[in-house]
Amino acid sequence: MAAGRGEFFRSFLEGLEKKPAQPALRERQLGRGRVSPGKIQTRAPPSAVSGNEHSCPEPRSQRKDFLKIKNSPSQQTFLERLPSEILIKILSFLDASSLFCISHVSKLFHKLANDDVIWHEIYMSEFGSQTWKPKLADDAALSVNQVAVEDRSTGLWKKLYLRTMAGQHMSKWIRELRDISPYTGLPRHTEWVLRNMNVSWELTVCNCRGEENTLEQSRVFYFESSMIVRWSAGRFPKYHQIGNIQLYGVRKYPNVSKPGWRSLILKLDVKSHPGRFIGKDRLIKLMHLAPGFIVGIWRGQQNVAFIMVSLHFHKLVEKSLLGSPVSPYSEPVDLPPVDNSDPRFGLQGYTLHFVLHNTSTKIMSGHFRQLSCHRVHFQRGQMELRVINRTNLSQHRLLSGNITLPWQSETLEGSVENCCILTLTLLDEFQKPFWCLSSPTYTQKRKNALSFDYSGECFLMEYHNLEGKVQMILVWLKEQKQFLLISLTVYVPVFKVNKHFSRECWS
Image (spheres, helix red, strand yellow):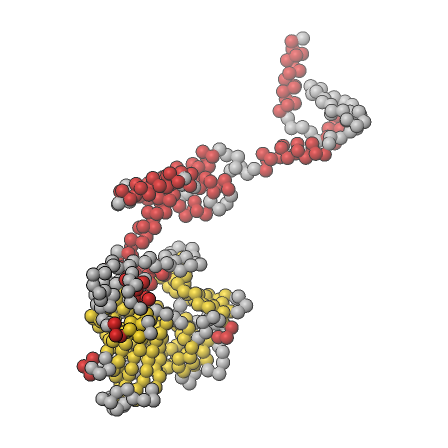
């Protein structure tokens, strides 16, 4: 008898371990009403309607709930069924960039990829020889405490890792930009930093239908305080179809197959800011789109031959590296200290670095110190700085070359006369940049001569925007075949001076 009970329980356990057979298959194998040896037949619950315990099926809602509960474990992947400790151990073998990628797979991986334990190991492996705090211990401790107090679950070590990496990345070129030239008031090694950081410039041209076309630079021309970028290869829309132009600084990573970082420098709406005609030759005509774009259009057509832009070096590295793809870099405001004891504070001690050039040569360069303005020189809300006085012959300067602007398309090249690039850097009395511009300009012939000391024809060259105005008067010396600059005046709005020096006493 004992042996019979043992055989029964052994058969019962075997039946529990086996998977249940399909109903149709069981009926074929066992037949209706038969019970397999060693197995117990279970009955379905009686129907609440008919009372027939054999013919009434299970309610549909109950079957759905049962299937849902039964199939939910099988719907999980193998990785999702693993404990979180094992998954964290697996993810700990990945680097930082791989963790960023895998965090977008699912909510589970997003949570695991931001685990503090993993990022602590990554931080210590990258900066293990250093202390985990930055050099300024007090500031670092304060910032770490603030992050910890705000939300510990957001990933303290991940934030510290990103902050330290960004600091090391920026320190590579910030150190080079600290060397300021006393001649221009700008960093000496701007060109070196841009080349060393593999920065290039891309142009995105959007037509009126919203279609975009991105163009890579064809040529870059560097000068002492500015640069010119030209795009002459690629598909351009017709000039009247251009909706907007977007200029990006792009840092490309060498030997890495990933897209470079795009930093928006300038976005120009051509429809609201139409271009101005500045010159032509027998092949093209030039249109100036403020602030610094030049569009070459084939004469007799609306097809674009090339696009050029002139960029000033002031904060150009920051604009090309620290902006985002949708918004440009925001320059921090660093106002000079207020000095109300000096009644002429903000009206004296200016320095001007002035350059006329084109894409190949420097036409004229000058450095002027101790520029000042008297109250009598205030005209229509503008402060007047007389750099070269028309009546002072000793200040007049010869231009070293003709005023021309060479151009080059994908197949042809030429030169437009009476056009060039004006680059201006005005420093305040603390030798900090006050007004910086680099833009195309052109000469206009004047009917009335403004100087009785020279017999040549007079020409006027101007540039103006909301930031200020530059006015030059030139005389063409026919025998020498050169231009002579006899007057140079810079006008700065009074509200700009008051805002810069935090004063409201002038109007």
